[in-house]
Length: 620
Ligand code: UCC
Image (tube, rainbow, N blue to C red; front, side, top):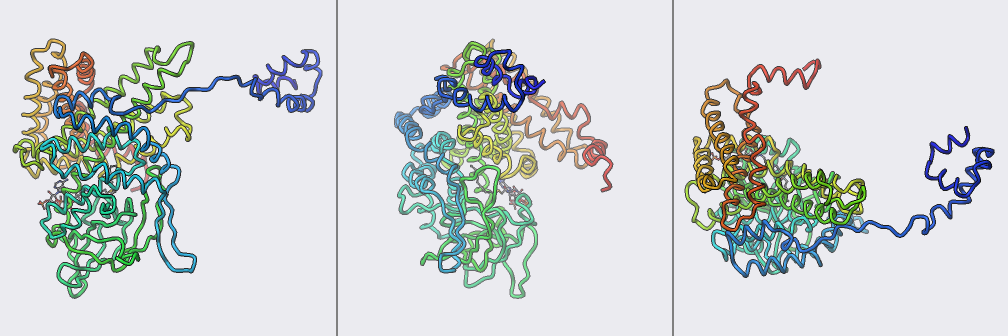
């Protein structure tokens, strides 16, 4: 009996025991005697010789540019410039040798808040690690924001900039967050026509001493989605365009920025402000005064977050923050639209970059890790799983680059009307779809490392934590689905017409390729279903369209990604892998909005049933 207890507790220990203690003596010993014996043997059991020499080779990070055949092929097709290739090759090396280590240091040394100095003076210093500061310098030198404004590659300017950002992001310890907001602020200032030239030059500078980052303080206590009714901050006029702001900002990312853009309501002489969207104006404020003291900002606390721990995210009390009005009065929300486009594009780039990094690491590991007598790469089921991750990543990459290309065309003033409509529609579509894909791909990728994927010091768990934010900040999936509807309504459906025309055009070439016939058929049929659905949906009961918004957005994403994969597969230098990816992508349900509509998902009765299902008898 005593031996059975010991046996259940640790079979392996018993096995080792049985090698050193004769069977008859084991059966005659008591539990305590056995424990004592085990203890005396522990030195032997857990000695180096008992563990053996094996350790698992870790997956190595190698130049992410040379590792990425799709990025290189894409650039060869669309931006075949040697200078770009050389720069990305060099940058890829820098990521491996320098940046990746800094990013990891940011994860391990999160920012902290020093509220008072040693003498009791309130200072509210957000202390970040040296690696974070170093990443700011690198960002300036490498022109990670500047490249978007230098116009060196004309309409492919953003493709170049975002290719670089895409390589940088998974190693950058979330420094992409301040860069996104900085780029967004530069864009707003550039298009505002206001005289803040010096600020624009700082945001887009390659000089580390001059370079500024910007925050984007939009979210208040009542919520980050419903900005228009949630913004309580008020602005009291001092002189001309200069105001003082009073309010509470609930989520402010990268709060160590040099300046910020923020929304507030201008009050009249009686202290009254206009509610809603039309009461909001946009302000620019420096975070610090010239003497180094805070510009009327009190840091209430740093947020304790699931991920993005590298980024200082804070609650701020604005108590007379000096700020400059940079939009027309009451046009604050419309003025940040450009910024939303930029930060949503960054989000998309970061999502696909996270997927790509995970695929690269999984691939590397599969060539090093053995199980059941062979390497993971020789297990077909394992490779099938990785191939699905790769397919998602490729589709996401092509959609992301297309959005960057369209943005570049718009900024280069070479965009057609169709391009402009597509950019408006595809920006939220790409952001919402890739945000979700990133979580799935990174999570599945983590699983392919087995238990090691769950171990902190592999660096893998932080990838999952950081991916989770991608579907939240810059607009959740549902909020962006509603933005898709907004873009359709605002353009009287023209964004959809542009979408249909573009997809059809991309499929024409592929018709003559037998290997792509089935994919083209599926895409055509899904497109036609989508067109019929969008024609009929406006005649349905109120609320139907809103219920369909998410599935509609997914349908737009899947069809467009399919069209881009097919288009890429018909390029003269396409490989059989490109064709295979397009085929596999089009195997799935490309138009879930029609599939779900057929099951009555958007009927008014369904709302009642959904409510009953969720609240399940609770009194509402
Ligand atoms: O702050 C956050 C965290 C920051 C971290 C950033 C880091 C990113 C890094 C990524 C890489 C690592 S998270 C905050 C999350 N919150 C949001 O993203 C806001 C979500 N809410 C929305 O998108 C809303 O729908 C609003 C606030 C944009 C719109 O609300 P309203 O008041 O209902 O707006 P309206 O009335 O529909 O639109 C007002 C005007 C209209 O133009 P006009 O007045 O000319 O008719 C709209 O057409 O704004 C225009 N508009 C747009 N235009 C609204 N949205 C857009 C748009 N997306 N593009 C163009």
